Length: 213
Image (cartoon, rainbow, N blue to C red; front, side, top):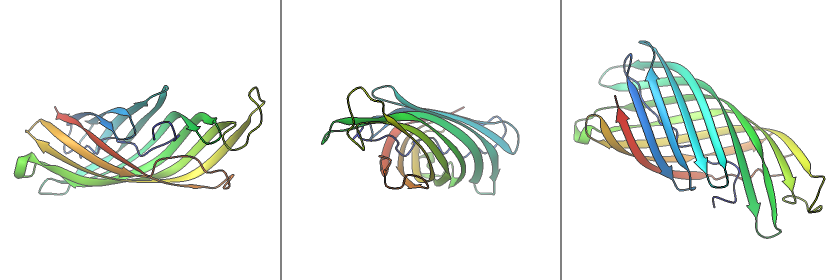
């Protein structure tokens, strides 16, 4: 599946920052053959920042930065609201009529996170996130949608799409180092060139480790 998609649900950490200088480092792998890492930091008593990166075969990548607000509402229940932007490169290959669809994309998004940290059982953290925004893509059709020639010229499609990504997570372990599992989904709705479906994965499962400084 990793060679058939341009985009997939991203396994960025849902950190649930609880106080100033709270820092989380998260790293793992996912079912779409990606390796990823996130660092999150409580900049002030209410502001947090985050950076994320994902890498897949054939030099496909995605990076994003975000900043937002967080609050501990009691009993270690946390909510966060981030605003951010991302940039990536994807390359999808179609076997039936050999061809590629490749290019860059940008994402402008808001993300809401909610959950609970440091439960009594196994220091468990759990919660969910909902990311929504605009995905702007510039994809070159190298005989992917339409067969033209081996040398081109090839059509470039500039598209805007609504992006919605829900994500669930669970962390278990010690006070600082925890094992995590994430389950993410993705839904894209094109506003332009709606007859040309952007190949993406609806679901992604991630496993990794999370360290709290």
